[in-house]
Amino acid sequence: MISSDALRPGVIARSAAPRQSICPPPARFAPRFFSLPLLSLALLLPFSLSSTRAAAVEPIKLGEIEPLTGKEAAFGQQAHRGVQMAIAEINARGGVLGRPLVVVVEDNQSKPGDSATVAKKLLSREKVVALLCGGTSSSCNEITPLAQAARIPFVATTATAPEVTEKRDYIFRSCFIDPFQGAVLAKFATTTLKAKRVALLTSVSASYSVGLSKVFREKFTALGGVIAAEQKYSEGDKDFRAQLTAIKAAQVDAIAATGFYTEAALLCKQARDLGLTLPIFGGDGWEAPELIEIGGKAVDGTYYASHYSSESTAPEVREFVKKYRARYNGETPDSMAPLAYDATLIIAEAIARAGTTEGPKLRDALAATKNFPGVTGRTSIDAQRNASKSAVILAVKNGRATYVETIDP
Image (cartoon, rainbow, N blue to C red; front, top):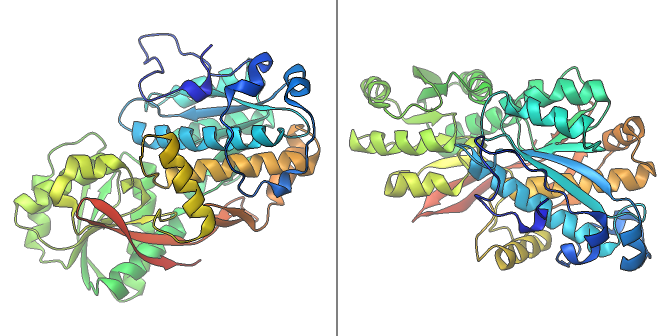
């Protein structure tokens, strides 16, 4: 087995090779993890066992499913780094209930069907006490029925589609949901961009995009705006000229593109090539370094919603960004990393409050989470097991994401 702390992009085998579970054995617990400053760990209760003693006890095992390879790898790699950092901090404190935490990581390779396959393995073979996933809403929807049937809590860290947590009481999330995000984007388009006529570009193969477009359409028109053009595409498409030509003819004030970063970057490039200089904006699916790497200067002047800003002056954000950069070669974390970081801490805090890793009791403790202080703000779990928290709008300027404004629930 490979140490989770040693994982870097590209290490996980792709589908051509057998998947490897990444879970450090308990005998090597103490030296496996970096010692990092604490963030919101006072709630985890004091632990005084020595590392020698901790090495002898059975670890608490979490399962993590991420798109570490494939087209959504930017999401999964950032999320996994956030989980790593949280695990290291918790273990430096002495673990939870006097036991170290370890994480078994599986790569869904950004492929439909793979999340369900690896979830079955984690639940039945690895006997994890909780699951995390930093993938899309579609991949998380594969996991939810399996976690529910096993009565094992599952926390989606970045899945914003409402249906992820609907009808299943063992399913939670650490991010805001699309109805809120859609309302945020509608308000931003109306009040900040002063747009009256907007074109809507939807990825019909992604439940995230379909749901976000639906809410944006409803909220924007309720504010007096007009959806003057609607165009569709599918994930993996590379040519958007036909859709953009139709949008250009509609004479709109802005374009809302609700899909993911790869297609967003390409359509921005093609829009600029067609002479469309108007504002283009999207949701949190845009957030990845690849947006700027692929889009280049074409994405300057675009906007997207996010869960936090690395430019925040809040002490917890500044500390997290500082330690992330020190650990990961100076890189600046996008929101996927702190969302996963916060989710891991929330699970650990819930285990401490429950006093057990038993599924039903851990579920109840997670449901009772209120005002948990994290990097992405204070998280409270509502009656639908969604996280109530603020959203921020970021703008791309000179090749970097910069803070614009915060919009509260």
